[in-house]
Image 1: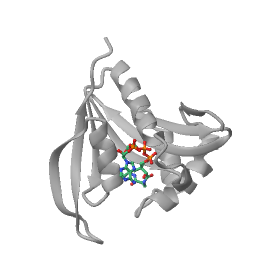
Image 2: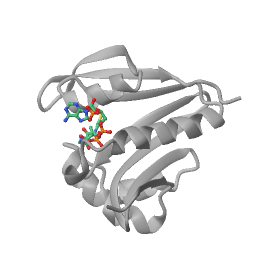
Image 3: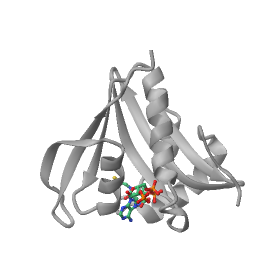
Image 4: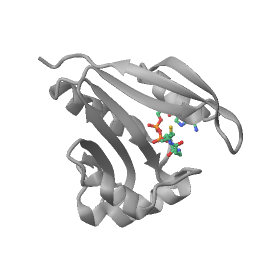
Length: 151
Ligand SMILES: CC(C)(COP(=O)(O)OP(=O)(O)OC[C@H]1O[C@@H](n2cnc3c(N)ncnc32)[C@H](O)[C@@H]1OP(=O)(O)O)[C@@H](O)C(=O)NCCC(=O)NCCS
């Protein structure tokens, strides 16, 4: 099996990222929205690649001391192999070198897979937005993780 590498996305990765996003999120970003995010100065993103196939991605943005995770998804056939955890650890490592102190993200309370993943990496609930997701009335949990300084 090909080794999985984690790297910064390039423009050519956009169709593969958009394809994963379109089937992974109830409210997916359009290809245009993804392209616009990737082009931003304050974006911090990564893709996971196996062979020449993009199998997952994470999109974040930073401001001051904070990093926010906007999107994280792994192709359904590649889940439970540690890809998302590797993407997040990679991003947290870069954040640490940039002097970012805390990583935030928002997750639906019913998203057990994502919650388990984030808790496993040390994220803790900061606060809860009740009935945040109008379509199904689910709560949103805002979780955060303190980033250790890398000196
Ligand atoms: C959530 C998601 C990104 C996880 O990706 P993944 O690559 O499968 O996750 P990993 O393999 O890195 O999992 C790491 C740990 O998270 C937890 N986890 C991940 N998926 C899980 C599941 N379906 N059920 C229970 N725990 C799960 C486990 O603790 C796992 O460790 P283990 O496999 O050793 O038990 C993936 O399921 C996905 O793309 N879902 C759709 C999009 C989404 O919900 N994104 C998050 C939005 S907030």
